Length: 481
RNA sequence: GAGCCAUUAGCUCAGUCGGUAGAGCACCGGACUUUUAAUCCGGGCGCCCGGGGUUCGAAUCCCCGAUGGCUCACCA
Image (cartoon, rainbow, N blue to C red; front, top):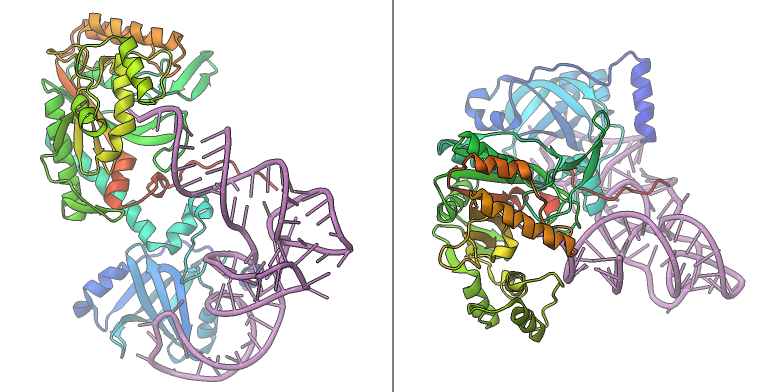
């Protein structure tokens, strides 16, 4: 860096501008390669970052990278003249330059641009990481993602794919008549999910606000308002632990469709995954961390009670009291909370014995009422709801239900949640009177679905950690030394 | 929050039994006009994550801390 600062000083003294300005590119690098037949022998202007230099005395080869890829430049003293050749030679790896030159093919067959004119557009003051090993230090890769992106091509590819995935989801829903909307990020009540919120404060109104933990309750208000198909794909925030599958702020899509139900949401889920995989990867058969995953619809469907029967060998289908359920939990060494009822025990067994089994895409439906305060009851067995979660590579990717639209039932469910909260569960839902008022105006029967976008991107880009699909993941504040 | 592991040159990594710090790439100087991890010759490069301790002597052993990774817990 010291040497580069000296070079910068020298340039400034000579009256040269190391920080550039507008530069007209005639082509991107890969366009030159793609259109070589037409461009052979013609002039082009290119711009990008110097990523490799191979000097041969009075001639030099340079790899110039732009957003599309690499182009080899050939720089010769007898073309540029001695002085300007020497100027060029003083450039460093990492510098951003613009060039004008003639397209040709080298003896070795590589399409190359013979440089006729070159100008420095930006001086890089810091040296790049090792050209061969790249940047591996995970801490720095996440904290200084810009460096990661400069040197690690596969990282760039992952984030380009992420954007394509999100675009394909929008396309899929827009084609089905869905309306994309924006609802508030700051809520006076953090509802719609079981999670602890981030808390902030509005000074002028002197009121506590929460960053949203879900999109649910506002989107359902829009169903009341007459938007029959809506979705929002955006950030939500949960004040919880960080892991390879959890980031405190993450991207979620929730969609709601009037006159649909849980089964309609199953169809839309499997079709959406298949559509997106096909658009972005060209296939519905993918590999995740060495395991073949087949996203082709239809996916397996199994009830939660049947799953527990199959994988834990425990039959919870019969009528039983909360005490009996808790006793059963104890016998199987399932850790329980004092506030738990039958429904929590069912969920506990499911999480302990079943979740890890669902490698291939699977809908698990029929969640207990106690853990599903916003879902319609199962008409045949009111202990359960018309709700499903779906699992791929043993990870929950999303959650859906036939939406509860009975305001009287909804009020009771909220009251039950408040009891849980009083019993010590600080993630239980809060009462939202305005939401109940909205339901009282009439919300059409509807199916609703939420999908964790980051996990979906992990799956489709074969990345092991959520931090590999979030450009700037949350990191602990590094202590200043 | 708990356990285990890691942290050494700009980057990727070695460093044996505790004895004055090493390689490749990058960088600097030189040679070289079709190379592509170019090659060849020469050179400089260090708060060994931080702070204590043990020791004649610590990158190395011990303790505390920071940051990261993995696993677990939490979290649908």
